[in-house]
Image 1 (cartoon, rainbow, N blue to C red):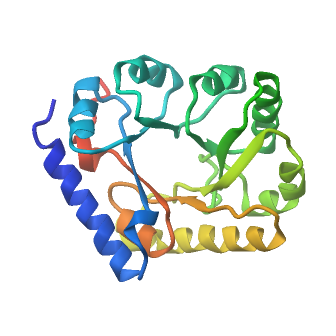
Image 2 (image 1 turned 135 degrees about the horizontal axis):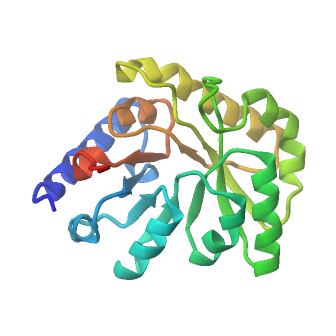
Image 3 (image 1 turned 180 degrees about the vertical axis):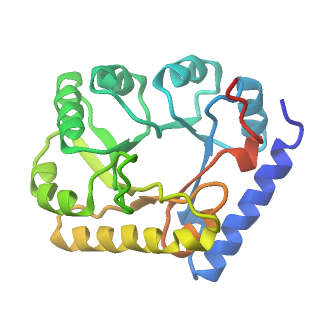
Length: 231
């Protein structure tokens, strides 16, 4: 448990406000997502007590263990990979947003099960903007080609796009990837009919650059909670 979490949250919030000012944006339109994977509920409660309400978990099982232990006014995003055989569990958990849907096939599975559950599933489509072989996500060309099929899927609310750029030594090096995702979202908006209000991009080391390039959701973990222990 870190006694510095409230202070670190304040610093991140100040960074969000500063980046919004640089890009002439209203900071109220930028969501700070506290990425809480591997951290204990005690740490999450420190963030909660400091005003944080939106949390992101990478693993469904870990999220299912934590969510019942946290106050009910928290909002949860699933930001890690989701297997098709776990879609029903994820939808029943009631995530506000499933952030990393990387393919038409998974989109179809979420749509089908959402129909069976009688709900609307809110998702983001993950785009592999740097065409990295090791990364999940639609290629830019595949997303363009499959857009009409995606639009036709029932019980699916596609809120926008997300990306994880290639590793870079400096935050500035991620700027082209963020700009590319923003441009793709603008292109798809013109095709209609969805407004695609959300762009999830930017993490602890580069969220300021992401905000300058149009991010609405920044995913910040270690800069809030500290270094992760994967042992």
